[in-house]
Image (cartoon, rainbow, N blue to C red; front, top):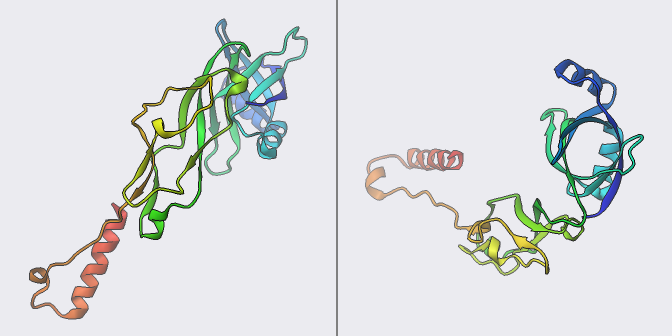
Length: 216
């Protein structure tokens, strides 16, 4: 994980109304958690969004620049709340970390390659967006690549198949499926079921069955 500086201020007033006011002012209410408790803080929505969309992402280490602090704490994001409509950040929980101590983190997966099974009519299914690994903070990757270039129809990649660098430990269940090339379901209509029915009706029934299967 890379380290990025982020300005922050201690928040004196907490509560729903205070948080709404802060958001209107372009601030994001947040909390910094540590072994000693929690500290309400404020960060700039513009600065945070700029960092995230410049390529840093949210899976990084933030050095929180608090005014008057002798040592600026390093932290990772524990939880993010966003408005599902406007995609704005509503609240962020940070977890204070020590750079010389191991941490557990949820790391996003990135699928690379083109699976042969897809060309055969298969469907690529993502069973998870992240995996949990443990290691030193600065050794943590910002993502884990999952190569599907050899996946055939009906095959899958499990957590145990992912190659981790030395010093990193997989915490996700090793047998957990990460991605799979699923065999598509086929809707069949038997001869007995359509005997005596006009061809147009049979075609319509098959189409309706297919649409119903897609909704399941």
